[in-house]
Structures are given as C-alpha cells and as structure tokens.
Amino acid sequence: MTNLLLILFLNFFSAPSTYMRIPLEFSEEIPTLQVEIQGKPYSLILDLGVDCEFALKKDVLDNLPEKERIGTHTIISLEGEETTSTKYLFQSIRLKNGEIIHTIVEEDNKEFPDNVSGRIGRNILQTYNLFIDFSKSLLVVLKNFDDLKMEGYSIKDFRAIPFEITRWGAVFTIETDFGSKRFFINTHAPSAIRNPGKTESQKVTTSKFKIGSIELGKTNLDIAEISPLLDDIDGYLGIDFFKNHAIFFDYQNKKALLHFKANFP
Amino acid sequence: MKKVALISLTLLVLIGCLFFFTQQNLRKHQLTRKGSYARIPLQFIGNNVLMDVEIEGEKYPIKLDLGASSQFTFFSETLKKIHEKKFLEFVTTIDVKGNEYKVNSYSIPYINAKNLSCKDAIVYEEPLEFVTQGARLWRASNHKEIPIPFVGRIGRGCFTSNNLFIDFPNSMMFVTSDMDQLKMDHWPICDLFEVPFEMGLWGIILSIETDVGIKRLILDTGASASVLKKYCLEDCKLQEIIPGKEIFTTKKFAMNKKDFGPFEFSVFEITDSLDADGFLGIDFLKNYAVYLDFKHNKVFIGPSPKICGAIIFDKP
Image 1: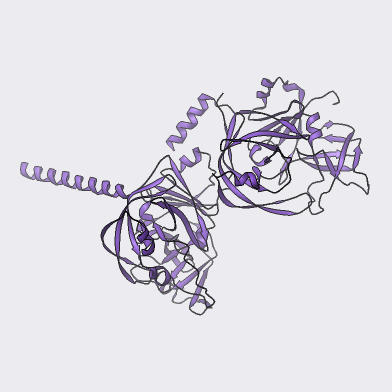
Image 2 (image 1 turned 120 degrees about the vertical axis):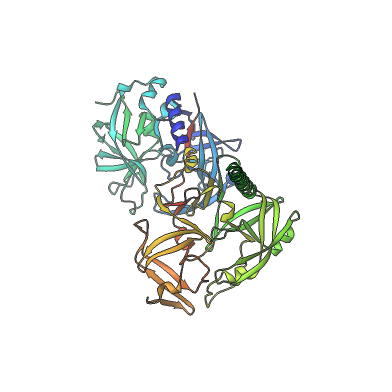
C-alpha cells in the first residue's frame, strides 16, 4: 500500500504524458494505423464500430508465437449474426508514442485489404479520451482536451454535443427528416442509416441533421442493412462525417466536442 | 544469579539460531520469483485446475491443489522420467477417507513455472490409487474412465511465503507478495470481500454460516465439488441424486456476513482426522476471483475482473 501511494505521489509530481499522437493512413479510403507486435510492423484498420481491443487475421496470429489463449468472445454484427472468435492475451502491442500492455487480441476472419492485418477496436481506445480528425489524418489518445492546443486547434472552435455509451460504444441521438435516430460510430464505412421508408435507392438525403444544438444541415446517408433485432440503433456516423468534422470524445463525461466549421449556425 | 542469566541468554541464542535455520531451510524449498509477481495461466479440464511446470526442460501439466500441504506430488511414471532427483525419506500421506500411504519423497534441484522457480523442491511420489480411489468420493453410474489429465499436483506448501491471486473465470493465477503490485502493473482487480481464515492441519479453513450452523470448510482447489461431512447433517433431509451420492442444499451460505447462498453440498463420510466439517471446492471457487493472503490469514473473494489492455504513454 505504501509503495502504491509512493508511486502515485511520484507520478503526480513527475507529470507523466497522457498524450499519444497517432498518424493515420488511408487504405482504400479506410483509416489505418501502424502497430508493432513482437518486433514486427503491422497495419491495422481503425474501427471504432467494433467491440474488441484488437483483432488479427488468422494467418497473422499464427505467426505470432508469444500469445496465450484465454477463451472466446462473441460479437453481434449489424446483420444480427453472432460470431464467436478465439481470444488471446498479448503482453504488449506498440503504438506510435506508447504501448498497450496485456491486451486481448481476437481472431478475425473478416476480409481485409492485402496490406492490412486486422483492426484496432474501440474497447482499448475509449479507456481514455479520443480525438479524431481524418482531414489531418490524425488520431490522438489523451486525457485533457486543452492539450489539443499543441496541434494548433483553438479550444473556442469546439461545441459540446452529448452522447450515450452503449454496447455499440458512443451513440448520438440525431434529429433527421425521418425523426430522431440513434447513430453509433463506425470509422471504416460511409455514414449510413437503416432504410427509413420503402426506398429502393442505396442512398437517402436528409435536410435536417441536428446533433444536440448543432444543425449540420443537408446530409447524404447510405442505406445500411441493420437487423430489426438491433432496435437500439438506427445508423452510424462514418468516414465522411469524420473527414468533415474533427471531434473530441470525452468518455468520462459522456460528451463530445465537435470542431466548429463555417457551415455551423 | 549470573549463572542463571548466562544460561537463559545461551538458551535464547540457541532458540534464535534454531528458528533462523528452520526459516532458512523452509525458504530454501519455497518458490522464488523474478519480478514483483508471476502470472501463471491455468487450464480447466473438467473440474481440474491445471498449470504447467518445467523440469529438466520438459513441460508437465499438474493440478493446483491448495488442499494439499505438500509442495509437489508426482506419479511414479513421471518421476521415472526425471533424472536428477535425490531420495530423501519415506513419508506417510493420508486421503480424505483416512487411507494412509507410505511413499518415497525426493528432492528435485529445480521446478520452474514461468518466472517462478522452486529450488530443491520436495516431491512426494503419488500412488495412482490416491487419485483413482482415495480422493474419489463417488462415481456416476454412467461414468467413463478418461485419462487423468495431469501428472502430479502442486500444493499450498509451495506458496505460503507468497500470496496468491487466483482468477478462476479468467484462467490465471498471480503469485505475488502484495496485490498492489498487480494494480500498479494495470491488472484490473474488482472490489474483493475480506474473509479471515485459520490455517489448520489440512489447510485454509473458512467459517461459513449455513442453515445448519457455522461450518468450518477447507478451501480446496483440488476438490471438484464442495463436501460436507455426513455427521453435520444427521437430522437433515438429504436428496439422493444418484445411488451413493446425496446432496444437501443450504439457503444460507454466508462468509463474514456476506451471503453467497443458496449453495449445494455433496455429503459423504470423511475421515475423522480432518479438522474441519468439509471442503469448499472448485464448484464454488470457479465463479470468483480469490486472493489468499497467507501472511495475514485472510482470503479476499469477489467477482472476476474483465481483462482489458492498459495504455502506457511514452514519456515526453
């Protein structure tokens, strides 16, 4: 106990960094980031829509000897299908400017682009606060919003919008032409909504798209196939949204800060 | 007067030396670890909790049996494969039915598990009938013999100079001197509930309130089911679920006033030499995380944490 207090005391005064700047690359429009696992570099999709810490292709996992099988994890897809995959405990995965220790990696049988080995999900990233600006190919894991001044952002240019934390991660309630809809975050697909009527088109347009007090105006959305079993979500905010809007997620206080742009009222 | 003082002083010094050398000798056989803790993966096969140890470069699966006072036991077949061993003496062991076994004991230079090492480990030769008959209290009518998935057992004799955090649902065990070491290394640990224990001849004894009064149960990771001695339940209605196996369900199952009930016991005749009323087995323990503080004679029980990674930021 004394040791713990001493370390907390020392940590307090040595002010450790809680700021991890991670550059993003875009592969086929999908954001990816570089990690290092057991001395080898891998490219992973940033997928805040998925309920996991890391997921790797089977052939990649097979070539990583230092892992420990610790059970299985079942996830449910948007189509309502349950998939169970094997979970492994990894001692460390290195990111730019930091590392994730004793982390869970799942086997992933999804198809990925050739140069991608898997994905990093929301579970590990939302243990801190998160800033995303796809227009600058930037992801930051951080504690204090004010630290974003280092990136040249002006704090007064952000506006607060509320969100809930659900089994789908952060969920925003957004007013649309089709009523009030619930959108989760999906960073590897364009923004989409469950078919709001009986349209046969692959896309819909809503003239109203209001999150909290911020009216974003005319917005195009893909039609997503979302199982009727998943009645707690109606759609997701995707890559296009995050290319247009830098956003800071304050997970502890369940509020996001959206970067102010000219089209805001 | 001076003579008396001198004799007293000499006696004190002798007792002190004896205590010191006894402690040194005990330490010699204890498990030592590199680092502030060791994390040992566990594997459940049936209701057996297994871990791997390494001897002379070979891996062996052994059963974690905190109900056993010994350090290690190995079947004869396994002991034959171990080249460097020194015969120590004959020892007498006893099973729960009261059967006695006179067995060989050996010293093995090193038994390792991850970053743990036991130097000059004391190993008892285990008669196969101890597992197949002595430790088996009942057999289902449709029972099929399956190969025993372990080659020996590791008992609490290995661990009492350390503390143990056993996270059964996550299949892992930590050997440490202080739970804070685990917290400092970002392992998630839920709030645990404190229960004092007494160390008896047969192991860690917990006092548990049941519908039939306070019962003293031995915490036993080697027991696949929790068991009460039959004499504790003379006037109680038992349910015979299969021929030869009776169970008793208590609504109350409280430790230090926290009720975990209802709970089901298997009921058997157990040797009178057992200084307790029964065993608290894996059927209960596998649902919880358990921290055993041998120094302060306390058990901490609570929900198993959800294992998740921790972000470590580089220093600027």
